[in-house]
Image 1: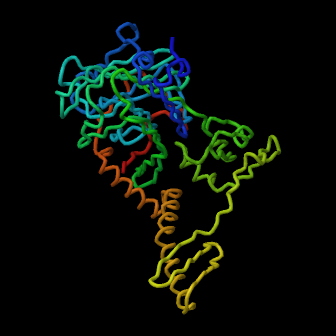
Image 2 (image 1 turned 45 degrees about the horizontal axis):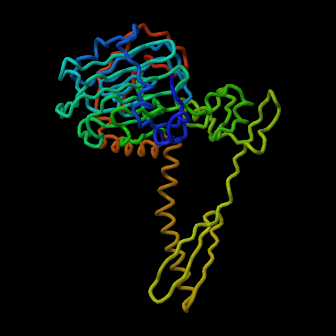
Image 3 (image 1 turned 60 degrees about the vertical axis):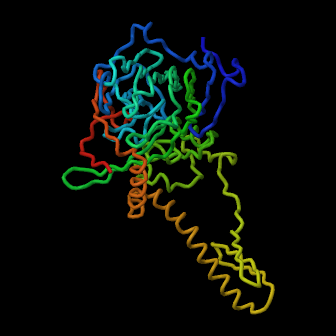
Length: 420
């Protein structure tokens, strides 16, 4: 029987709160290994025929016997990767390690070093478990065997369990392959090109980065989902929600969202992000109550302090009204006022200007500014090797269910994406 944190000793677990998930670290062997599923005793265990013994970076999709929520999106499949993670994206591509991953331990593993290495999974009605058994690092096989599991439950909980971790994760090289422990999600923007092609851009909007120092032998990490805007299906439930997100209802799409999920392109293209916060639900004919409205606090004008030899003065500039208040000690007041205004304006432009540009570019990714920001993000990802690692992908292992229009499930697009 699984124990809850309250049933364990205080030094056996640690709770961490994130925006989309809470994480609980289990450090004692007894408390952690309650989550371990012995695949040797299960009749549903399958040794993956493609991935077990693979020497390269490979991944294969599996249709699950459960439906689960991932960042509020309904999913029923996952791609198992030799690199110690699951890919749960809605589109197939080669850069699986970049984002939309569930990573108990993402690293450069080689399953062809020893015949004892394998990837097994158990696909049940209440849970889906994948185990990387006796896998070795490609560049340092002498470091020992790694054995760990990830389980996705039908109530959308995710648990990472570590049976054997021979070295500290900080000693694993990231020169070829990224090392990650956590989960992430992203949305896509498609820009039509000629000849029935599109340029597909990937924007990661959230990641849960877990503490790698707690990944040791006989430990576990439990991720429990928190409510998100996109789980609400009516206007009333959306605008009256109090879950930590600023949920808005888009009547054109009949969808609730904070503006950042996998359907962001539809949200932007249909003008949902430009709606006022005072949404009126036609069926109820009521406005959201005042407790659900987000009121921006009145901000004081930023103050910039400038030091001048032999004299000192303080200038505060209000960006909205451009009213300047100056406190001066000494002589040559007009000259000092002019200098202070020029310096304050320069500082304002240098500091606030780039921030406003980044916000604009992130909000409108299809503009020239957005494309430039995307290129900067791409270069940053390339330096971290997340996009450099390419996986050979097997689209399906089991018979796939038909993908409905607008579904979050992976499918084949009518257009040919050109990945950035």
